[in-house]
Every structure is written in structure tokens, then in C-alpha cells.
Image (cartoon, rainbow, N blue to C red; front, side, top):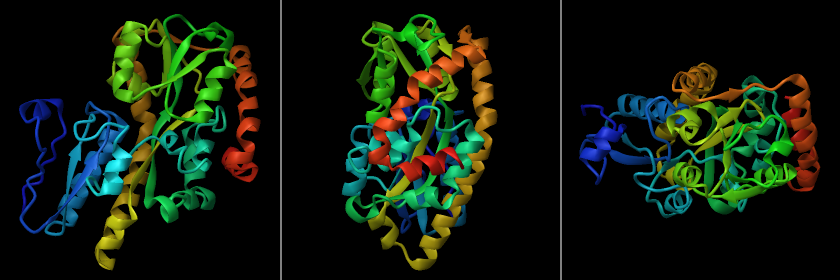
Length: 330
């Protein structure tokens, strides 16, 4: 039996800048899991490590998962191509990355479509949410195994933002999502798409003036160090598509595939239930580290909602009115 170990920390990566080893036994199939998030407390990091630990224990002798965090194997601009080529078998990119494959995942980017994490989890466990997992299988070969929540999003900027007009004329980093870009334009600001790994430097040097993210991302990537403050808008969900390829799944025996998918689902459900506590802890960590948080009044929050709600209509024909209503009413 192999000794289960996963290369997870920055220290381990600094010691070995080459291949990260999980001490796989000879004859086991190596399953590479690449993601872009660093640290040890981020929900994605915790979920990826949990998956590896369970697979490496429960499927010992069959599969062996190696985790490559913090863009050490592939950055977020290359990872989907790497999955198609078979260079990796597991990813957890943001749902915002799939605009060129399907417009339906844009439902997760719509501002204020979900009230909170519980609302989002209900939708992902619904029949419509589960059906979306296989949306890209037929033409791209991508298969969703689950939605990994990272929390709700908040804006940070070089100056305090209390109402949307405070952002007028500023540049905000966003993901490659048309919905996110239109949301920023609704604030009379300029969206700038860029890789997650580049955001800290861009904020530090003034290439962009602000960004939107979860408490966990803001804390673990230390964005609060190079921003005036974070505004508690709670405007959007950040979720990742925990995914693989149909080629990989179909290459497994029926029994192994069923066991692997069952472990993946159990890890997903447990991870999502623990996100709220982690987000609350990282919000507190930001304040403890000297970061500032702007809390909105009900009137200010209504102004944010009223400013961004028209974005729904812009994408209704692409995403589907029924799907938007299903998400909003979950």
C-alpha cells in the first residue's frame, strides 16, 4: 500500500519545482488535478485535497490523484486545452470560463440572481442544475462532476465603493465572462479580463483599479493589501466546475467509474456545506490583517441591485429565460 501524500504547500513546491509526487505505486493510474488556487484554507484547495485523500485511500491500487495547486502545472488560460489533450484529468475552473462553449453557465454570473449560498446550493442540486453538468459533453468532451462553491463575491477598489456610481471611470479585473463585463459596464466602469495569477500585480501597479471576489480569494491572495477597502455587495456567486473529460471517465471500468463519481459527489456536497464557515473566517481574517470592509445600508444595496438587474435582460435570450427563473426561484 502506498503512503498517501499530496504535494499541496508552497514549501513543497519551492523544494521541488518539477513534478509533484503523490508517491503513487507502480501499476496505479496517475490522475493529475490542476488548479490555480494557493494557500491551505481556500475552499477549492480543501476540496481538492479531500478528493485526493479519499481516492488515494479508497481506490488504492487503482487510481492515484496528484494535486497541482497555484498554477504550478497549468495556468487558467491553458488548463482546458490540457484537459482535452489528456495532460491532466481533473480541473476546477470558474464557471465564467466556459462562455466560448456554452452561454448557459452565464446564469451563475448574473448579478443578484442568488440571495445567498443556500439559494445557490439548492439550484445546483435541482434537476436543471444537474443537467447543466453535462452541457458540454457532446461537443467539447467536458463532463462536470459537481459545482464547488467558493462563496458570494464582493468588490474591492482603490477607493471606497458605497454606490455603483463610485466606480465610474475605473478599471475592474473580471474573468472572461460576457455577463461579468456587462455588469461592470452597468457601473460606468471598464472591465479588464485577466488571469487570476496576474490580479495582485495588476492591482499593485494600477493596471486595474479594482476587482470582485470572495472573502477566501481576497484573503488568500492578499488583495486587501493593495486596495483601499472591500465593499460587502454580495452581488454574485463564485463557483467552480469540478470537471473531467469524457475520455477519462469512459476509460475507467464501470465499477471504478461508479466508485470515483460517488466519491466526487460526496466530496462536493461536504465541501459546499462547509464554505459558509470558511468565508466568515476569512472575512474576519481580512479585518484582523488590517483590511477595511464597507457595509452597505439597505438603501445603498437597493441601488446596486437596481443598477445591475438590467443585465439579466441582456442575456435572457442566450442563457434562457426559463433557466434564469429556475435559478432565481430555486
